[in-house]
Length: 168
Image (cartoon, rainbow, N blue to C red; front, side, top):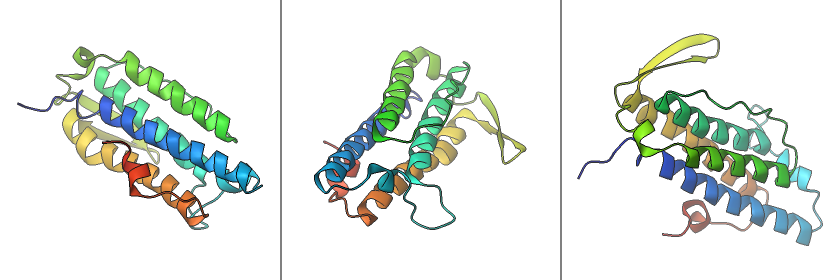
């Protein structure tokens, strides 16, 4: 049995964002229990030249919704990127998941050879659907999920691999 473009994308994004949401819930609970201002986590970075946690979550959301829309041949939803609290980040994740759930398998399947163009750092970049998903989107999606996890872990949140992977 072959793996469809839909199966390799939408369920993967929904699961990853669900696990991210659960990790953010743990961070909010931890901050409250330890009397830590949540903005400490929201603005934390792994290195001075890296984006803070809030931007990592925004980019993970953008990567997922952008991929789904481009593979489906529909307009990419635009979000403001103004989240500064755990509830706002959770709302963004929920909005992204709702969008992903609105995209059906027939919209995505058959997109392996669909031309995909986007601007990266001011340059037009072109892909075909399958290499776009497998070689560009999925690595970027997991990079930003992992970086969010690492920021929280580095700042004392007691989470482990099962939190990142989620229930199996």
